[in-house]
Image (cartoon, rainbow, N blue to C red; front, side, top):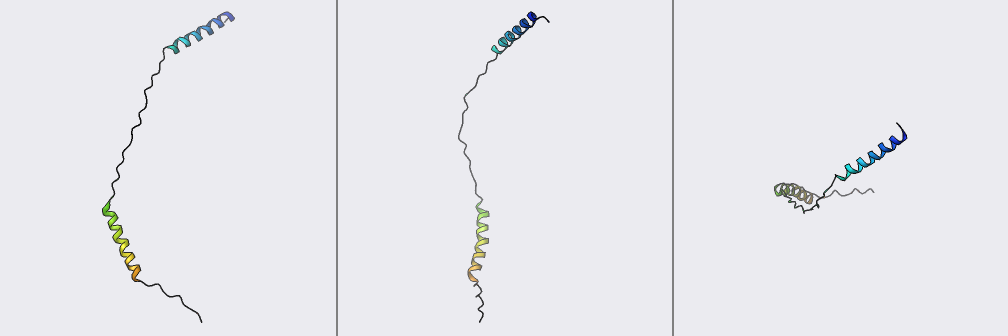
Amino acid sequence: MTPRLRVFASCLAVVAAGLGSGCVSVRTEPIEVKPIHITVDVNVKVERALEDFFGDLDAQSKSLTAPKPETKP
């Protein structure tokens, strides 16, 4: 390939790339951020069962007396 042909081919490649990139268009739309609503349901039945279970244990612990420490003479 002659130097003149290389220059012509390079110029032709640059012009083709320039023309090809001119046809590309990008359109962006604004992004909307909307609030998110979350509903949390509490299972009251399980909570009451746990309170009853631990309430029974608390009542038992109140009725028990702590052992007195041994004193050595």
